[in-house]
Length: 323
Length: 304
Image 1 (tube, rainbow over the protein chains, first blue to last red):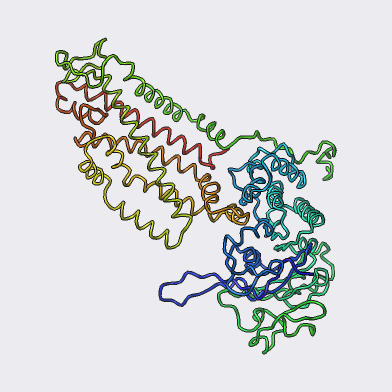
Image 2: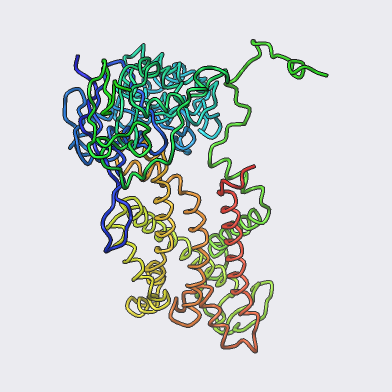
């Protein structure tokens, strides 16, 4: 089956402000990332803050222009599409934002907010729109009689649901969820996760879920991609990655998940990383993780490992399978 | 000792109503209006301004005397029942002339401000939203225009176009819009980085739609406040121009012209100076109070 989204060697860098005569410097936020997502599936992207996961999501939606590599939407190369070429596609490629407080226009009522995408694409008549807004509000669990209220009158979870309803108004096929849970407390997180899963079952939407909450991501994702310093270091089915991580960085990341029982085995074998994440302006040569890797060899310092198949998933490590 | 579960009484699940919103629903405009009304000085200013405006616009129509009707037989009279503020050296009714002058002054203040607002919003909005090189150039243009004092523009334009209401307005507009443009540019630059602007972009909204429906509407507060404070500035500038004798000229009258007329005979008939100056003061006070009140009412940090 043709993937909904396919990304090949995607690159995004940001210029760092330097003096007039200094050498130009770039933050390499996304570096040579490749993956694909099939219809109705979820890819979870995990990694530390600043590893480029949000940038990856935003570059795929062309909020940022990619600096290299290619993006395919249902087999069409959209990498070089300009704003007007992207316009019809935006209907199908949507985004759910991290901060439900900031992502809604404070001057729009809930009804206007959910209606907005339909107005932009000139969909339906006015009466039909109102009906759809009501339906969407029920779908996401909002009371339809709140239609005239303003975003500041709602709680965080309610606002996140308003954002989701707005996104669904366009019937998208692919949604980038940029840290959709991180601004919500735990009980509300569960609500939103269930809502996203229910919508996926009903409409066969594909998701990219960017998050740093490893448990939530495991719950919602079919596949997981682990990012470190802009590189995708491991990708594969969610359960396999959590049960048996192959890349040393993934191992450290998975072992950092808090365990309810402090005496459990996991606590004892916790792998604590030494040192800091290197600056994304000066990405280390060879394997980007070699400065903090306990298994680091001479090869790791000099040669960059490519994503390679290891037991049904892809790992970018020279030692993969041998650890 | 109480056990933790005894601190709380469990709620009957049927009574649970998480979606309920207790706060009364208020639109932005109504919320602002209510907070504005809570400020006594601002309300007093608004009422005073409204009263002056109504009298100034309706008064000359009701007054039995035309503003330029001369009758030298009754020149330089003091206040009487027939002439409430007395008459000037040409025998014109001073009360009618003050009302007429207030009308011209208010009109110049509001029309010039409206023009400044439109130019400033469009220029500042585009500079702030487009950013980059275009923004840089547009800011430099503003710097250059503003580097010459406003008075010089006004005087030059009065000399070129003659002394009338329109050239005063144009003179005020030549660099009056810059203040507004700077405020709008700053607001738009901050707002466009907010996530709801990105959300609108992802939804496929056009640039124009994002600029006006997402960025401008959220900058309404500072725009209104700046505009309200621009009105007294314009009125003052007009009065000053007329007072030094290059603004509006007789027989037309603005408050500045009246003050200038009174200047010559200030030692004999000081009251002729008092009336127009008093009205200028009242108008500027009222506008400043209204502006201050709006600033407080529109400031989201003041919300309780």
